[in-house]
Length: 338
Image (cartoon, rainbow, N blue to C red; front, side):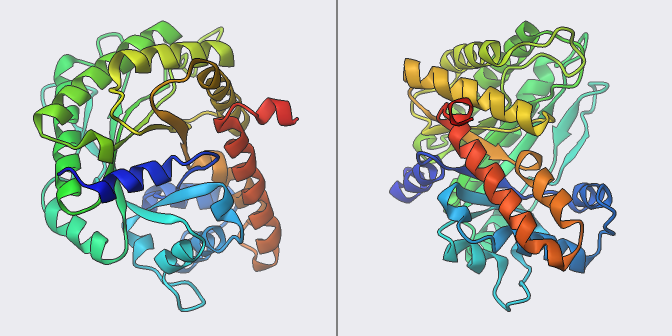
């Protein structure tokens, strides 16, 4: 579906100086996050936390779009407005996570496939009617001695492409997210090889299923050393290997690549993004490069809030500071600003 609207949404999400807030945590994930600051996960505490994020004045200066969870897109804030309305008031584009999480991949021990294609067409139409303008689907690719298999890459790429085609048919701009996990002791070269293979498999499927690439974004991992590797690659190595990998496997027709933080600590994710932004400024790749962070933006404000309404102002200030720092990093200006 070649649509100027899809292309315009993709371009707006990767506009200069801006990135995405991935606030699409499942109920289980947000429960674990809230418990880290001593807050019980209830419908009310989850709503209060999301309202704090989405009513932060000035957030639209740094955040172009927010990825929501099914519960969130249906919620109303204490003001009576929907969460979607608060985002659009701030000039932020609302989006929605539509996959149903991962399950074991039959015939491939230890590997996973993402579920959620059943009934997806109807859910996409419902989300579009509720104000969503883009969607996201995540695949999880693990690195091990004999993994990932070509079978795992193909099955997940097929599902990503099927989702993307259905999303565009519903008028929602798709973000395809094949995340190569950083868990393990592997070096950066092994991550490079797996990420390149995943991208090649994915884009072959996107072409095959007639996905309009100009109306689609890639959300992907940086090319990193494993979390338990010693030593781990420097930000400059991460930048060099990431851009080299993407040039090999990501078509120029794709408007932008948005990075996930993928388990990195806040500062590590920011420094690596900054190095990528600086190198991109020098090399001039064909796609915009920005961020789509969840924990990398939310950890500091969550700790400042700790479930107390009196801490709302401090928490929102922390969110703005993290968003500003990450915005600087996407253009390679973070360390220079220090």
